[in-house]
Length: 114
Image: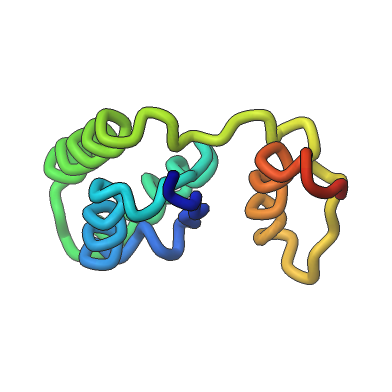
């Protein structure tokens, strides 16, 4: 079985990087993981970037619908759930990075306790 890798928004925003990572994952080299929060951040960021580039809202909507559909159909088990219960239980210097550890806790609960 391939190892699992959590993909945060920062690695999913650059399209070439995202495409390479997801192509590698399709080859079963690793199992990609993300959360609904990461997908919301990805959506927000890509909408903002496309707006700054002058893309029409309809074009962005269609692009994101295709992207979400492809990600969901290619990796139906990628969404990590159960992390919401640990919100507020972990402190990091940058509070915006806490969700990465929150997502890991349900996956790693049999190995360590936060």
